[in-house]
Image 1 (cartoon, one colour):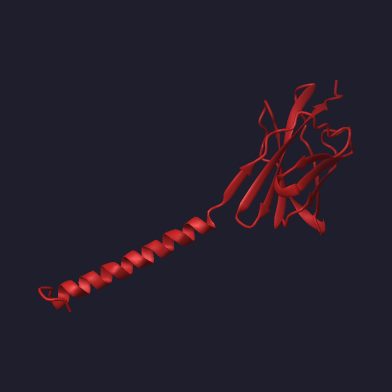
Image 2 (image 1 turned 30 degrees about the horizontal axis):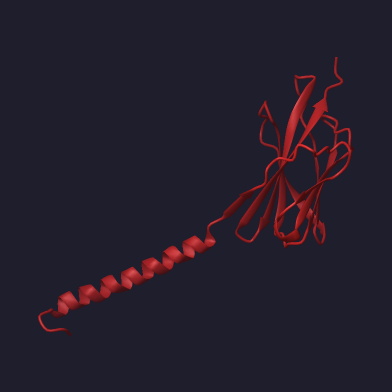
Length: 160
């Protein structure tokens, strides 16, 4: 070893060096695994009653979202569809919630039907208001990226 350093001190230095290298590698691995969250702004021009809404993403990629039937009835089966073009997606979910009146968690995992197309059935709960604004928050999972795209729509209660 070095002059003036005992074997014990040399051993401590080696152990500390190994710990430092291990800690640095661990931190780099954690940083590479962190989820990158990308939130796309709400498109006010989107009208889900008119048909699918298409949102442009980076590098020419896009996501399309639709709800059928287009009148979007309450407490009746709905078909949610997401079509992704221009990038690979590992999974898609949609969270349905009121914009001004939060409802119980209603998050639906969509199934991959064919390449880039995801689909699932859902139902909106009854609301005490005659008209209610909802948000369908589409989450696209791709590796460590989470892309969230909001779509808004209004339901009208025909009760009473």
